[in-house]
Image (cartoon, rainbow, N blue to C red):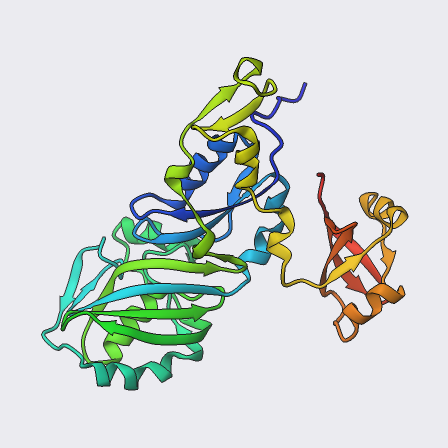
Length: 326
């Protein structure tokens, strides 16, 4: 007999404002318990040092995580000049020092070289694989690690302010795979010094932004809410937040698909999709939306405005690849 999964079938996104000082895995665990959700995952790790947007997927939203991870990301971070650390952030050990401090004008002149597609080596303490092993595991074991440089895309890099001679604050927009810690390290070297990230905040991850992110303190440990509390048995409440208000903290599964063309389907087509069958895409209402899309392009099937599946375009039809059981 299959073991019953703990928790409730909760579906949607929590745009969490992760505080510095805890890891992404722990933050996801707190959110999952707060919503008493059966299943949870996140759309892109934030280091313990970092704060900001950590989109947490619950239930069927986990099927859309890759679309958020592939989206653009924005960061605000502080570089401290004069100290290189083995982790490229303030949590590591000092491995080199320099007395040189770049001027504001020098920093501004150096930035254009780091915009566009650039070659960037991930930090030694990162999750990339080196010879089949996670780099951070090798580094923690004392094995010298030098991850190979790879192409990444930086869409924007701007100097916000020079706090003092020791620190400068930047903003960066980038694509998947770029590391703020690597950029800070390489920028310092280009300026004739060394440096590391001393503060880091993610302000955007795909369609999720920090302006409407939920602080962790809004999601305390849940209390079980039975009929005696004015709710239905088996419904959880978050601290002093009612079950209805708790649901209001969730964003829809389709939030992750904001940038994907929509495919409106009929009731009969929806039934076919739920059975794993393709549907035609050239009906009048959809033709304009798919014109010019290449084969294998992603589509979001909508029934009466609600997302029911992720689809892939194939000629004149669309094939379901992820059906949402909502």
